[in-house]
Structures are given as C-alpha cells and as structure tokens.
Image (cartoon, rainbow, N blue to C red; front, side, top):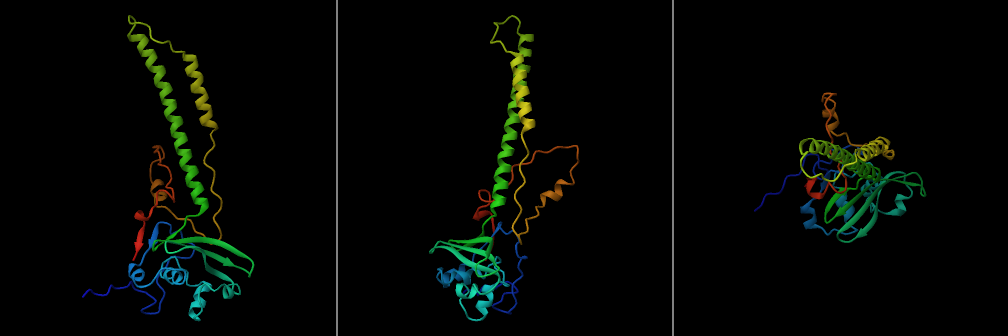
Length: 254
C-alpha cells in the first residue's frame, strides 16, 4: 500500500497556518503550480477551479474572496464581492476543462475596479501571465540587439572588402585585372552605415509597472558590476517572457 505523500510545513489543512508565500505583487512568471493528487480527486470546472487556485502560491489570503470562503459563501459571488473593497480575484474567462483565466484586481467601489495581475490554469497547471510592459521591453530589446549586430556585421564586411582589394593589387600584378573596386564608394557606404549606427536611438524605457507590482531583481546585474570596466562583453538578447519561458522550464510546486 502506498504511503500518503507528506505535505509541506505550514499547510492550512493541517495546522491552520497559511503557507509561506512571496509578498503580494512579486513576479512569479518563472514558476508554475500543479497538484496531481487534487486533479485526480476533483473535477476541474468553474465550480472547483477557485478552490484549486487557492492552493497555489499565487493566491493572496488577504483578499476578499478568502473572507467569503470563511463565511461559507462562494468566493466568486459577485453580489457579495461588489459590496467589498480591496484585493479580489475574478474568473475572467473559461474554456472548460482546459483553460481558466483568473484576474487579480483592486476594488475601490462597486463600479471602480483596477486590474493588477492575470493568472491562467492551463490543463491543470497554474501560471502567472507576464506583464504587457515586460513583454514589450523584451521584444524591443531583442530587436535592438539584432539590429546592432547586423550593423556590426555589415561594417566588418565593408572593411574586409577594401583590405582584400588592396592586397590583391599588391600581390597579383601579373594576373588578369579583376573587377575594379571603387574605394570612394566603399568609404561612402562605410560613412553612411556609421552615421546610421550613431543615429540609432537606444532601446526605449518600458512603461512604469502597475501599482503593487515589484519587478524581479536578476542576479546577473550583481555579477556584471564586478567585471572590469575596460573589458567589454557582448550581452545576449533579453529573455522573452513568453517565448523563452515555457512550462518545461518553470519550477513546479506539487
């Protein structure tokens, strides 16, 4: 007979204490949550999906939905949530049984609601959707990286053409004259490329993050400050939060 799997310390179903969660607003796009034991025991539909989401580290237990759950009221009952203020979760979009979109928002009045973060349950795994500003910043940074790399490649090719032409004229005087190279044209093209490269503006700054959102602090920034100022190192393009971070690359909390 298989032994019952041990739950992590601080589970509310055992000792009544909430699990240790990151502070609200922390960027957790690099992790996902999946509880296969729960999925084998309960159906994943619009009636049970919020109970499943409440088990994940993305859930803020200070929200209004938690107060409704403690009073034996359905946590997604809009008639009660509209009368409360503060942080709440809403089931934004449903495509049973594969996709559920949950939005975290701040309610100031029955009519005024400010969206904060978005989460989605895809085939039983819960993820945090990346911020739109981080997606734009990553795409623009990636495009600027490849544009600058293309300019460097073209500039190096132009210099090599002029150098090869001079060496061929010096070494092969007796051979048949090849196609003539206009060095003035090469210098003019080189000048145009250099001027365009100087006029190319840097990558624009991303828009400010929404209220309550804390951007991640990468460890690469601390390591980069220790390098010597004289040595220049070409950095790779920024990591795309949609393309480069798939479900297989994220840590799972079972």
